[in-house]
Length: 264
Image (cartoon, rainbow, N blue to C red; front, top):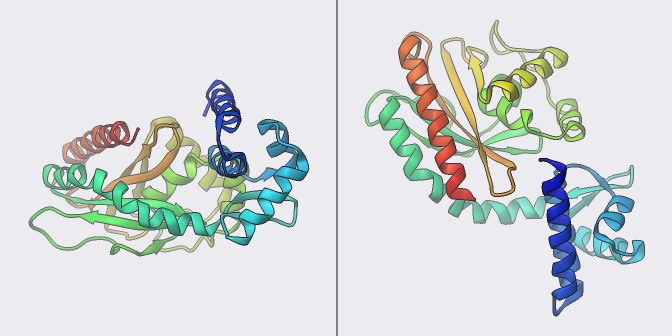
């Protein structure tokens, strides 16, 4: 997310506070939006200065938001969005899934492979939806499953777009379990893989979770250019290869772009 975009959003936020009828509510919502925009651990000083709020005011709002688990405070004096927002988001996510569903169903039929939709939850990937062609056998995890991000394409995409500080914290919490001979278990090598994922615009799991399965994943973005989810196509290495793999990857990337536009 570039600085111009952030600065524009901050100006809008401050203007919303000035124009709001109930300023205390506007300030609380603005802090939540600010934490979401930063997508990182943020200090009271940063919140106060960036939003032009007195420290005492910002501190009081943060304490209240913590009581309701909208914000989580850390021992180092920094803040991030709390778990209750995720819980609320899970309910709202039904609409998000509804937007993506027809595109993903069509993608599964077109590429004749399994299609997955996942989000990052703490240091895991939560599978929120899954689509398969009308024939063939089940492949991969079931909806609602939490998976380790280091060995799946969805995880690589979701982590690759995290801010550095958030990525550092997430990687510290990952247990780099070895599932196959191809599983990456070295955090430094995994970081290099994330850099490559970000550069090429998609992630690949080449037999890293299951030795006979390959998966390619692409990011979904909202109107703020934030990576909010990822989609993937999974298949058996024996059949999902060569021209079929390239076709599937092309269809996946086009599908991700179309969904992202609809989410703006």
